[in-house]
Length: 496
Image 1 (cartoon, rainbow, N blue to C red):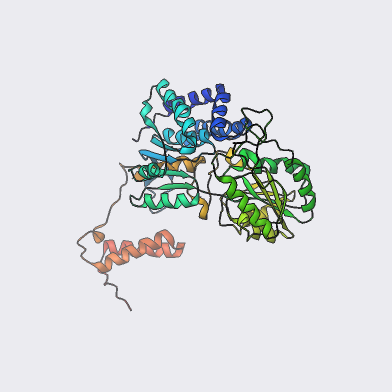
Image 2 (tube, one colour):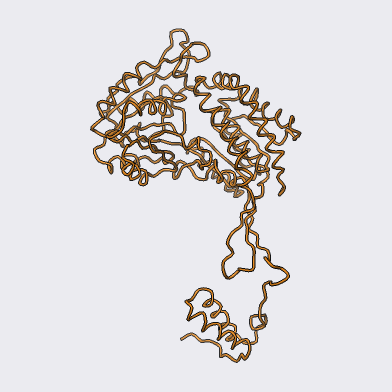
């Protein structure tokens, strides 16, 4: 398992990249048909992110998994110390439905490049796209590059299928989904002590300071909230706005949100927001909105099911703007995963930080401020696994960065060197640096059975002082060791 044919694996990834570039439309159309996302959302979330994962892995993956030589320290100066990265074996990825192509190929790219086989369990919500198309891309690519297609396995099923994967003896697990299911995955995996990477729910914030250029940030915030109909783990669910620009920003958002066009993207042209992927979400979302309104929030637009005149059976929730939110409201605490822009007001930076940190979720965060000092002040105090200044979600396009949250939002990381190394077992190695000149040697005074424990205590004590004490103490200890080794006869030490 130690040998990773890097060049051969690079050929696989380059072949996959070439296929994606030439088949972007069909990949996005399949994702759209199965999830209801728009083609533009597919280009962003399915194509761009996957291509960047491949590019980073091709450019940096080999160096990331090289033997990592470490400083052995003065005590072990004659040793070479390093960490080796060995494939775990067969890893599993239980992935969510919101981006079926990228969520399938992201862990696949990482796993096979590290030398693993992978078992991918996709959501039943995207059974068609995963089994009919995406799985065939992966297996065909492996065959074309001379690899066994059985290196990658695909499963689609319900809870019992996921449980079988988690308890089936795989060597590592990546899970993307809700924190409730993530807790069950971690519990089931603990029986075999199977390591897990858990990327769970989010309630990401955008904190908007009063010095910002509103014309510049409104389009970014709109994309952050309504990309993929809000069905993003790092989608912006809470917009925390300074009181000085609060009313103006509401006016600008209301104008744009009321003009968003909704419907089936493959049937109607110029659609901004597609459908909700999972059925039964409308009632849940309407209840969250109404609960907030009953507690004093103001619904500006949306907040209910949208019935398309030509497609009345579609699973559409109207793009929503709701203001006056308080941290205690359910809509402020529960992950909506929907096209809902929820606005909070703050007067001081510390108040904004307090509102942001009031959620149990701690995945991503975004801060908008021209004053970089204030922006960094906020970011440093946010409880989150990721943060962006004056942008949304770009940390995921920087594939050199690890991706993940803290607390209820999960643990472990994928992406970046940390993600690639996470599907490996780390082995610590020491070897003799100059094997013909020097090796570890125990003087007779330290060899079992010891003739004089007192001498042994003096030698070990002075050895510690030679390495760690000041120069005076070191010199004194050298003479004491030489004396004991040559003359001996020290009395055993006694406790006072």
